[in-house]
Amino acid sequence: MEYYREEEIRNIERTREIMETLPHFCVGFFRYIRETTSARTRLGYARDLKIFFSFLTERNMDLKGKDISEISLENMNMLTADDLEEYLEYLSYYRLNEKEHFNGEKGKSRKLSAVRRLLSYLYKKGKISQNPGELVDTPKIHDKSILTLEPDEVSRLIDIVKSGEGLSPKEKQYHNLMAARDTAIITLLLGTGIRVSECVGIDINHIDFGTNGIRITRKGGNQVIIYFGSEVEEALYAYLAEREEIKPMEGSEDALFLSIQKKRIGVRSVQKLVKKYSEMVTTIKKITPHKLRSTYGTSLYRETGDIYLVADVLGHSDVNTTKRHYAKLSDENRRHAANVVKLGKDEN
Image 1 (tube, rainbow, N blue to C red):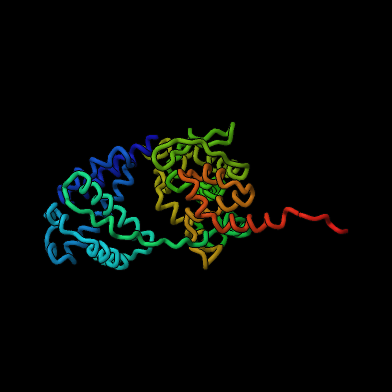
Image 2 (image 1 turned 120 degrees about the vertical axis):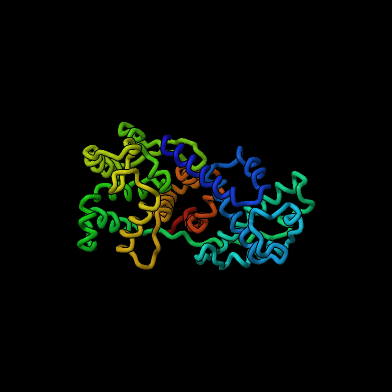
Protein backbone atom coordinates (compact mmCIF):
# COMPACT_ATOMS: atom_id res chain seq x y z
CA MET A 1 0.00 0.00 0.00
CA GLU A 2 2.99 2.33 0.46
CA TYR A 3 3.31 2.76 -3.32
CA TYR A 4 -0.37 3.71 -3.64
CA ARG A 5 -0.17 6.19 -0.75
CA GLU A 6 2.80 7.84 -2.42
CA GLU A 7 0.97 7.90 -5.76
CA GLU A 8 -2.11 9.45 -4.11
CA ILE A 9 0.05 12.14 -2.49
CA ARG A 10 1.65 12.93 -5.86
CA ASN A 11 -1.78 13.22 -7.49
CA ILE A 12 -3.03 15.51 -4.71
CA GLU A 13 0.04 17.73 -5.04
CA ARG A 14 -0.33 17.93 -8.83
CA THR A 15 -4.02 18.80 -8.48
CA ARG A 16 -3.21 21.58 -6.02
CA GLU A 17 -0.62 23.01 -8.41
CA ILE A 18 -3.17 23.17 -11.22
CA MET A 19 -5.87 24.56 -8.92
CA GLU A 20 -3.68 27.56 -8.18
CA THR A 21 -4.05 28.55 -11.84
CA LEU A 22 -7.84 28.01 -11.99
CA PRO A 23 -10.65 30.45 -11.05
CA HIS A 24 -11.17 30.71 -7.29
CA PHE A 25 -14.67 29.17 -7.38
CA CYS A 26 -13.09 25.85 -8.42
CA VAL A 27 -11.77 25.42 -4.87
CA GLY A 28 -15.30 24.77 -3.60
CA PHE A 29 -15.95 22.36 -6.46
CA PHE A 30 -12.94 20.17 -5.66
CA ARG A 31 -13.84 20.22 -1.99
CA TYR A 32 -17.38 19.16 -2.94
CA ILE A 33 -16.26 16.10 -4.95
CA ARG A 34 -13.45 15.08 -2.61
CA GLU A 35 -15.36 12.37 -0.74
CA THR A 36 -16.80 10.73 -3.85
CA THR A 37 -13.77 10.69 -6.15
CA SER A 38 -10.21 9.39 -6.10
CA ALA A 39 -7.18 11.66 -6.15
CA ARG A 40 -6.45 10.42 -9.66
CA THR A 41 -9.96 11.38 -10.86
CA ARG A 42 -9.66 14.86 -9.34
CA LEU A 43 -6.33 15.34 -11.09
CA GLY A 44 -8.02 14.42 -14.37
CA TYR A 45 -10.78 16.95 -13.70
CA ALA A 46 -8.22 19.66 -12.88
CA ARG A 47 -6.36 19.05 -16.14
CA ASP A 48 -9.55 18.96 -18.21
CA LEU A 49 -10.94 22.12 -16.61
CA LYS A 50 -7.71 23.97 -17.30
CA ILE A 51 -8.11 23.10 -20.98
CA PHE A 52 -11.68 24.43 -20.91
CA PHE A 53 -10.70 27.70 -19.25
CA SER A 54 -7.76 28.06 -21.66
CA PHE A 55 -10.26 27.71 -24.51
CA LEU A 56 -12.45 30.45 -23.01
CA THR A 57 -9.56 32.91 -22.66
CA GLU A 58 -8.47 32.13 -26.21
CA ARG A 59 -11.79 31.99 -28.09
CA ASN A 60 -14.64 33.47 -26.03
CA MET A 61 -15.33 37.09 -27.06
CA ASP A 62 -16.03 38.23 -23.48
CA LEU A 63 -13.03 36.45 -21.94
CA LYS A 64 -10.43 36.63 -24.69
CA GLY A 65 -7.06 37.75 -23.35
CA LYS A 66 -8.02 37.35 -19.68
CA ASP A 67 -5.97 35.35 -17.24
CA ILE A 68 -7.72 32.12 -16.29
CA SER A 69 -7.67 33.04 -12.61
CA GLU A 70 -9.67 36.21 -13.44
CA ILE A 71 -12.70 34.30 -14.73
CA SER A 72 -15.63 35.04 -12.41
CA LEU A 73 -18.96 33.45 -11.55
CA GLU A 74 -20.60 36.24 -13.52
CA ASN A 75 -18.64 35.07 -16.57
CA MET A 76 -19.72 31.49 -15.95
CA ASN A 77 -23.34 32.58 -15.70
CA MET A 78 -23.11 34.01 -19.22
CA LEU A 79 -22.04 30.71 -20.80
CA THR A 80 -24.46 29.13 -23.26
CA ALA A 81 -24.91 25.74 -24.89
CA ASP A 82 -23.35 27.27 -28.01
CA ASP A 83 -20.16 27.96 -26.04
CA LEU A 84 -19.93 24.32 -24.97
CA GLU A 85 -20.62 23.05 -28.48
CA GLU A 86 -17.90 25.34 -29.79
CA TYR A 87 -15.62 23.86 -27.12
CA LEU A 88 -16.34 20.35 -28.38
CA GLU A 89 -15.40 21.47 -31.89
CA TYR A 90 -12.22 23.09 -30.51
CA LEU A 91 -11.22 19.82 -28.84
CA SER A 92 -10.88 18.06 -32.19
CA TYR A 93 -7.59 19.92 -32.64
CA TYR A 94 -5.93 22.64 -30.59
CA ARG A 95 -2.51 23.86 -29.53
CA LEU A 96 -1.62 24.26 -25.88
CA ASN A 97 1.80 24.98 -24.41
CA GLU A 98 3.24 24.82 -27.94
CA LYS A 99 1.99 21.25 -28.41
CA GLU A 100 -0.64 19.91 -30.78
CA HIS A 101 -3.55 17.98 -29.26
CA PHE A 102 -6.23 15.83 -30.88
CA ASN A 103 -9.35 14.32 -29.32
CA GLY A 104 -11.65 11.62 -30.58
CA GLU A 105 -15.09 10.73 -29.24
CA LYS A 106 -13.85 9.42 -25.90
CA GLY A 107 -11.54 12.35 -25.25
CA LYS A 108 -14.27 14.88 -26.03
CA SER A 109 -16.79 13.04 -23.88
CA ARG A 110 -14.45 12.92 -20.88
CA LYS A 111 -13.48 16.58 -21.13
CA LEU A 112 -17.11 17.66 -21.51
CA SER A 113 -17.98 15.55 -18.46
CA ALA A 114 -15.58 17.56 -16.29
CA VAL A 115 -17.14 20.85 -17.42
CA ARG A 116 -20.67 19.51 -16.92
CA ARG A 117 -19.89 18.39 -13.41
CA LEU A 118 -18.50 21.81 -12.53
CA LEU A 119 -21.53 23.59 -14.00
CA SER A 120 -23.88 21.20 -12.21
CA TYR A 121 -22.17 21.99 -8.90
CA LEU A 122 -22.32 25.75 -9.49
CA TYR A 123 -26.01 25.55 -10.43
CA LYS A 124 -26.91 23.30 -7.50
CA LYS A 125 -25.21 25.67 -5.07
CA GLY A 126 -27.00 28.69 -6.56
CA LYS A 127 -23.81 30.28 -7.84
CA ILE A 128 -25.12 30.43 -11.42
CA SER A 129 -28.75 30.77 -12.54
CA GLN A 130 -28.63 28.39 -15.50
CA ASN A 131 -26.86 25.18 -16.42
CA PRO A 132 -26.00 25.06 -20.15
CA GLY A 133 -24.35 21.66 -19.65
CA GLU A 134 -27.81 20.08 -19.54
CA LEU A 135 -28.52 21.32 -23.07
CA VAL A 136 -25.48 19.78 -24.77
CA ASP A 137 -25.47 16.21 -26.03
CA THR A 138 -22.58 13.96 -25.12
CA PRO A 139 -20.57 12.94 -28.20
CA LYS A 140 -21.72 9.52 -29.36
CA ILE A 141 -19.01 6.96 -28.77
CA HIS A 142 -18.93 4.28 -31.44
CA ASP A 143 -17.77 0.96 -30.08
CA LYS A 144 -14.69 -0.41 -31.77
CA SER A 145 -13.75 -4.04 -32.15
CA ILE A 146 -11.47 -5.25 -29.38
CA LEU A 147 -7.88 -5.29 -30.57
CA THR A 148 -6.11 -8.36 -29.21
CA LEU A 149 -3.29 -10.75 -29.98
CA GLU A 150 -4.08 -14.12 -31.52
CA PRO A 151 -2.80 -17.23 -29.67
CA ASP A 152 0.14 -17.68 -32.06
CA GLU A 153 1.05 -14.01 -31.61
CA VAL A 154 1.00 -14.43 -27.84
CA SER A 155 3.40 -17.39 -28.09
CA ARG A 156 5.63 -15.46 -30.45
CA LEU A 157 5.67 -12.43 -28.15
CA ILE A 158 6.71 -14.45 -25.11
CA ASP A 159 9.41 -16.23 -27.14
CA ILE A 160 10.84 -12.91 -28.31
CA VAL A 161 10.83 -11.45 -24.80
CA LYS A 162 12.72 -14.50 -23.53
CA SER A 163 15.24 -14.74 -26.38
CA GLY A 164 15.69 -11.15 -27.50
CA GLU A 165 15.40 -12.32 -31.09
CA GLY A 166 15.27 -9.42 -33.53
CA LEU A 167 16.72 -6.84 -31.13
CA SER A 168 19.61 -4.64 -32.17
CA PRO A 169 23.07 -5.35 -30.66
CA LYS A 170 22.64 -2.38 -28.32
CA GLU A 171 19.16 -3.51 -27.28
CA LYS A 172 20.46 -7.04 -26.67
CA GLN A 173 22.97 -5.75 -24.12
CA TYR A 174 20.08 -4.28 -22.15
CA HIS A 175 17.94 -7.34 -22.79
CA ASN A 176 20.56 -9.65 -21.27
CA LEU A 177 20.17 -7.74 -18.01
CA MET A 178 16.38 -7.50 -18.06
CA ALA A 179 15.13 -10.61 -19.89
CA ALA A 180 13.82 -12.35 -16.76
CA ARG A 181 12.08 -9.18 -15.54
CA ASP A 182 10.53 -8.39 -18.92
CA THR A 183 9.36 -11.99 -19.34
CA ALA A 184 7.75 -11.91 -15.89
CA ILE A 185 5.98 -8.61 -16.63
CA ILE A 186 4.64 -9.64 -20.06
CA THR A 187 3.61 -13.09 -18.83
CA LEU A 188 1.89 -11.61 -15.78
CA LEU A 189 -0.07 -9.09 -17.87
CA LEU A 190 -1.11 -11.76 -20.37
CA GLY A 191 -1.85 -14.38 -17.71
CA THR A 192 -3.93 -12.32 -15.29
CA GLY A 193 -5.33 -9.32 -17.18
CA ILE A 194 -4.24 -6.88 -14.50
CA ARG A 195 -3.84 -3.19 -15.32
CA VAL A 196 -0.35 -1.80 -15.83
CA SER A 197 -0.84 0.50 -12.80
CA GLU A 198 -1.69 -2.57 -10.71
CA CYS A 199 1.36 -4.40 -12.04
CA VAL A 200 3.91 -1.72 -11.11
CA GLY A 201 2.40 -1.39 -7.64
CA ILE A 202 3.05 -5.02 -6.66
CA ASP A 203 5.44 -5.62 -3.75
CA ILE A 204 7.34 -8.87 -3.27
CA ASN A 205 5.32 -9.74 -0.16
CA HIS A 206 2.09 -9.41 -2.16
CA ILE A 207 2.81 -12.76 -3.85
CA ASP A 208 1.77 -16.05 -2.25
CA PHE A 209 3.10 -19.06 -4.13
CA GLY A 210 1.21 -21.32 -1.76
CA THR A 211 -2.06 -20.30 -3.40
CA ASN A 212 -0.57 -18.74 -6.56
CA GLY A 213 -2.25 -15.49 -5.62
CA ILE A 214 -1.19 -11.85 -5.80
CA ARG A 215 -2.72 -9.04 -3.77
CA ILE A 216 -3.28 -6.01 -6.00
CA THR A 217 -4.89 -2.62 -5.46
CA ARG A 218 -7.64 -1.81 -7.94
CA LYS A 219 -8.70 1.61 -9.12
CA GLY A 220 -10.40 3.29 -6.18
CA GLY A 221 -8.11 1.64 -3.65
CA ASN A 222 -9.87 -1.72 -3.19
CA GLN A 223 -7.51 -4.63 -2.56
CA VAL A 224 -8.25 -8.00 -4.14
CA ILE A 225 -6.47 -11.30 -4.67
CA ILE A 226 -5.99 -12.42 -8.27
CA TYR A 227 -4.69 -15.87 -9.14
CA PHE A 228 -2.16 -17.02 -11.72
CA GLY A 229 -1.32 -20.25 -13.51
CA SER A 230 1.83 -22.30 -13.93
CA GLU A 231 3.31 -20.20 -16.76
CA VAL A 232 3.11 -17.02 -14.69
CA GLU A 233 4.43 -18.92 -11.67
CA GLU A 234 7.47 -20.11 -13.63
CA ALA A 235 8.22 -16.61 -14.96
CA LEU A 236 7.90 -15.05 -11.49
CA TYR A 237 10.17 -17.64 -9.89
CA ALA A 238 12.83 -17.08 -12.55
CA TYR A 239 12.73 -13.32 -12.07
CA LEU A 240 12.70 -13.48 -8.26
CA ALA A 241 15.88 -15.56 -8.33
CA GLU A 242 17.58 -12.56 -9.98
CA ARG A 243 15.64 -9.99 -7.95
CA GLU A 244 17.11 -11.38 -4.71
CA GLU A 245 20.61 -10.44 -5.91
CA ILE A 246 19.68 -6.80 -6.60
CA LYS A 247 20.11 -4.10 -3.99
CA PRO A 248 17.30 -1.61 -4.70
CA MET A 249 17.52 2.14 -4.29
CA GLU A 250 16.12 3.61 -1.10
CA GLY A 251 12.32 3.65 -1.18
CA SER A 252 12.07 0.72 -3.61
CA GLU A 253 13.17 -2.09 -1.31
CA ASP A 254 9.76 -3.82 -1.38
CA ALA A 255 8.99 -3.31 -5.08
CA LEU A 256 8.66 -6.47 -7.15
CA PHE A 257 9.65 -5.00 -10.52
CA LEU A 258 12.68 -2.71 -10.66
CA SER A 259 13.99 -0.45 -13.41
CA ILE A 260 17.59 -0.53 -14.68
CA GLN A 261 18.21 2.23 -12.12
CA LYS A 262 17.06 -0.22 -9.39
CA LYS A 263 13.97 1.85 -8.61
CA ARG A 264 10.35 0.69 -8.76
CA ILE A 265 9.48 0.48 -12.44
CA GLY A 266 6.95 3.02 -13.70
CA VAL A 267 3.88 2.74 -15.90
CA ARG A 268 5.59 4.51 -18.79
CA SER A 269 8.52 2.07 -18.75
CA VAL A 270 6.17 -0.92 -18.96
CA GLN A 271 4.30 0.72 -21.84
CA LYS A 272 7.60 1.19 -23.69
CA LEU A 273 8.77 -2.39 -23.23
CA VAL A 274 5.40 -3.77 -24.38
CA LYS A 275 5.59 -1.55 -27.46
CA LYS A 276 9.19 -2.59 -28.22
CA TYR A 277 8.54 -6.32 -28.10
CA SER A 278 5.08 -6.31 -29.69
CA GLU A 279 6.29 -4.38 -32.74
CA MET A 280 8.43 -7.41 -33.58
CA VAL A 281 5.32 -9.60 -33.53
CA THR A 282 2.88 -7.43 -35.48
CA THR A 283 3.24 -4.21 -37.41
CA ILE A 284 -0.48 -3.67 -38.06
CA LYS A 285 -1.65 -3.79 -34.44
CA LYS A 286 -0.72 -1.11 -31.93
CA ILE A 287 -0.27 -3.24 -28.82
CA THR A 288 -0.29 -1.63 -25.38
CA PRO A 289 -0.53 -3.11 -21.87
CA HIS A 290 -4.28 -2.53 -22.08
CA LYS A 291 -4.42 -4.63 -25.26
CA LEU A 292 -2.68 -7.45 -23.37
CA ARG A 293 -5.43 -7.09 -20.76
CA SER A 294 -8.04 -7.31 -23.54
CA THR A 295 -6.28 -10.39 -24.91
CA TYR A 296 -6.63 -12.08 -21.53
CA GLY A 297 -10.27 -11.04 -21.18
CA THR A 298 -11.10 -12.32 -24.65
CA SER A 299 -9.41 -15.67 -24.00
CA LEU A 300 -11.15 -16.05 -20.64
CA TYR A 301 -14.56 -15.28 -22.13
CA ARG A 302 -14.06 -17.67 -25.03
CA GLU A 303 -13.04 -20.44 -22.64
CA THR A 304 -15.80 -19.91 -20.07
CA GLY A 305 -18.60 -17.94 -21.76
CA ASP A 306 -19.13 -16.34 -18.34
CA ILE A 307 -19.31 -12.55 -18.71
CA TYR A 308 -19.75 -12.09 -14.96
CA LEU A 309 -16.54 -14.01 -14.27
CA VAL A 310 -14.68 -11.87 -16.81
CA ALA A 311 -16.05 -8.69 -15.22
CA ASP A 312 -15.00 -9.87 -11.76
CA VAL A 313 -11.50 -10.94 -12.75
CA LEU A 314 -10.85 -7.76 -14.74
CA GLY A 315 -12.16 -5.61 -11.89
CA HIS A 316 -15.00 -3.94 -13.81
CA SER A 317 -17.36 -2.30 -11.32
CA ASP A 318 -20.24 -2.55 -13.80
CA VAL A 319 -20.79 -5.76 -15.78
CA ASN A 320 -22.42 -3.67 -18.52
CA THR A 321 -18.95 -2.26 -19.25
CA THR A 322 -17.73 -5.79 -19.85
CA LYS A 323 -20.77 -6.68 -21.93
CA ARG A 324 -20.22 -3.63 -24.13
CA HIS A 325 -16.56 -4.47 -24.75
CA TYR A 326 -17.23 -8.13 -25.49
CA ALA A 327 -20.51 -7.68 -27.38
CA LYS A 328 -19.10 -9.22 -30.56
CA LEU A 329 -18.00 -12.34 -28.70
CA SER A 330 -21.44 -12.56 -27.08
CA ASP A 331 -22.97 -12.48 -30.54
CA GLU A 332 -20.67 -15.32 -31.63
CA ASN A 333 -21.84 -17.37 -28.65
CA ARG A 334 -25.50 -16.70 -29.46
CA ARG A 335 -24.96 -17.78 -33.06
CA HIS A 336 -23.28 -20.96 -31.84
CA ALA A 337 -26.22 -21.61 -29.47
CA ALA A 338 -28.61 -21.59 -32.43
CA ASN A 339 -27.01 -24.77 -33.73
CA VAL A 340 -26.51 -26.59 -30.42
CA VAL A 341 -30.10 -27.59 -29.66
CA LYS A 342 -31.58 -30.11 -32.11
CA LEU A 343 -35.35 -30.23 -32.41
CA GLY A 344 -35.57 -33.40 -34.41
CA LYS A 345 -34.02 -36.81 -34.37
CA ASP A 346 -30.87 -37.33 -36.38
CA GLU A 347 -31.50 -39.57 -39.35
CA ASN A 348 -28.36 -41.69 -39.54
